[in-house]
Length: 117
Length: 117
DNA sequence: ACAACGCGTAACCCGTCGGTTACGCTTTGC
DNA sequence: GCAAAGCGTAACCGACGGGTTACGCGTTGT
Image (cartoon, rainbow over all chains, first blue to last red; front, side, top):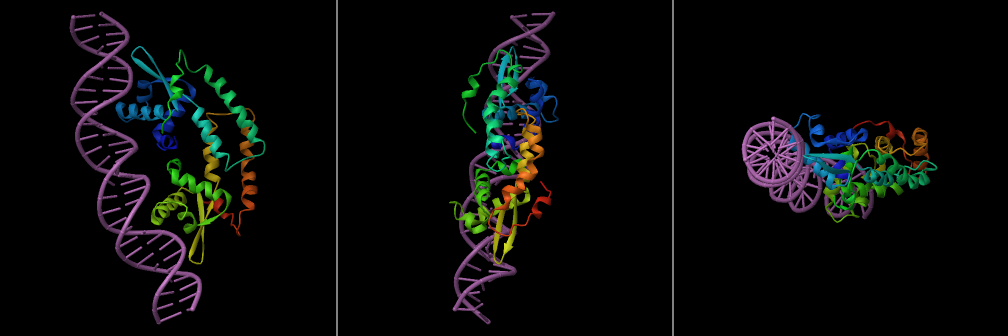
């Protein structure tokens, strides 16, 4: 998963998806690289579980899935632990779902089962 | 910097340094890969500012430098922000020094000034 | 002074990554 | 039904990453 964050393009994609869900095309047109190149970055993000996708007609929409980012955050706490953080991290999960609610639409949650990276 | 965290060996090294400073040899002997290989991982960590090093005779000791990890943490907050976190992040810097205090060795804190990667 | 130690660097090999163009499949619209 | 749109995949290629062995340089100890 950490490897997925190594690439600046992929990090930028995640930042885009922070505000709203986007189709593959919408994402691609914001980069100067070719569309297939972006498509593969999206595949990596998908495989690592950082984003979810769902099809709407001929478009594929991507949605940020913060769960893995929370894991990263938790890993980081072993190095940096401001007082009172541990409990906050427990509460994270709940907060996450609230944030996620109004992003995705019909949304199958199956993709959350994929484990790789 | 994110690229430096992509490799599992390097992440593991950071975890080792969390408890105590270690010499290059001490680090290397905990891996099954060759010493030069570890040495290069250390170079990457050094270049990205994740660790500091200081020489003692013919040994080179490595010390964790959490600053860049704090930056990562801050980047992550744009995706995950439990209520009340923003202020805690401001207080992070101070906490960092406390954590670092009781590592064995004289421990110069100058390394926090180094900016790279 | 000299052998051994601790560590970094160089040269090399090979797998992976990230870019490109060409292509194919499904959906949309006329 | 057919052309165009929207994406993904395949094949190819240069660059990079991480492993190895060989080597060099400074430090330590006798």
